[in-house]
Image 1 (cartoon, helix red, strand yellow):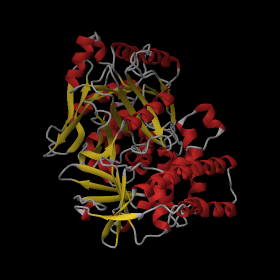
Image 2: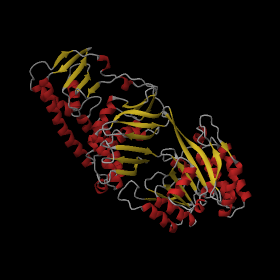
Image 3: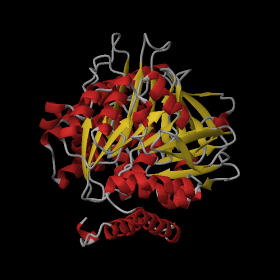
Image 4: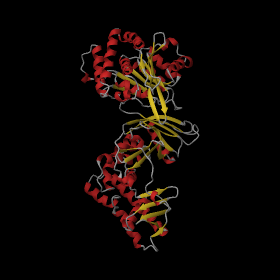
Length: 626
């Protein structure tokens, strides 16, 4: 988890507060001067309060109605002038830092306000508004106006954001490290809405928006503040602003937090909740309103070129957010009772480390050595389990150990596997229409059949969902292709029953499969545990033999059956034209590598494993060429 920062001065000392229900804006001020009224004018460019109450010298004062009405008019002029200047600024693409310094003096919002705000303020003062500008008032519970007290057990910082975890109440809170960061994000997002490139206008794709607005934001951030912002915070702040500029401000904190594995929305207007890698299922303080949902849906439809409407109320697709692959599922009426449901799963572009998987009892050293051995010898592998049980994560882990000279072909309806180039591997990815799309014409089945002419060393099919998928898969396997795929099933026996009884696959063909791995997902209190519960081999008579089992993760009572594991050597020896005893030696070598280097980086283990594999094949190529 990210490092916790103890000294959170800005976060502890809020200078403003907004009561959305009562539409009251609270401000803290040192004295009644031009900076106070500039501050009010700036806040009015973003908020529409009925009342403004100021804390001054341990007393509370309310801005009188005549003054507030005039300040609102001033704020409208500021909005108009700001938008003109922002638009002109991004259109000219100004790189002259001397000019930027002059613009900063006009548009700056922190630590002091620029001349644009002072100009409007002077116009107000010239009118000689009758009566007192501020009148004294009483506020109850004044201590909690600026600093809302809440308990948390853990805190960590990512860039400009503070993440607080209240483990007892299962809460996950996101807040800005300082008021300055909050308002810079607001202001910069407005500026970036004016930033367009020719590529953006042609494609409207997120990657084009991201590149152009990130570059623009980093260039013009300095016009909003004269304070020096550290580099890591600066980039994080600008990225947040560019996501805010397209209406995705509330999902950005969840995207950049590596601890968040999934996030969900049950209905529009409710708060998002997350699956946290350390603390499990947590509610957040991020309420996803209708405008947030509409912005999200607009992006999904534009990126996927899929429809989401009354006739097609469900969509599944994958989108890259800042190089992070995200699988998104959205449902709307009439399929859902509410206004919309969101299920987002983040897929790590990096493979889970062997050290972490062994420490969390995901599998045993013997079992992982066996699975890597089976993968290198091109076994047909089925990975089954309930949704979100870690099937794809295991598939990615195993495919990471495939040799670089193999041609690995993926067929998926949503990109969930590793990027196309990992450790110099040759990966070709075909994306087909998702099963959820009513416009889909079973393109996955067609592509599985077509891959017979694409010369794969290994075929990775992603999730097998329909009768057509299953029949096409067995057609490919019967034709000699080697495959790895995932499927939903409670265990291997249930998977085989569905193949035979539901999809009508002859029992004789089941023996074409070599391994069935069952993943389990256990929710315990507020945490989620994922692990391999069993590995079974499919013998030549289509029978199942248990190789590995871990049926009680609390006691870590896993066992590994060498005798049953050895039964697959005969099948793989015949497939690869290698003697059984040579394969046995290869497996033992891989097991020694796993045990002796369990705390090493994946890249080190992969190098040693591929060297062992290459040596067994009698190859003389050096690993560096792979």
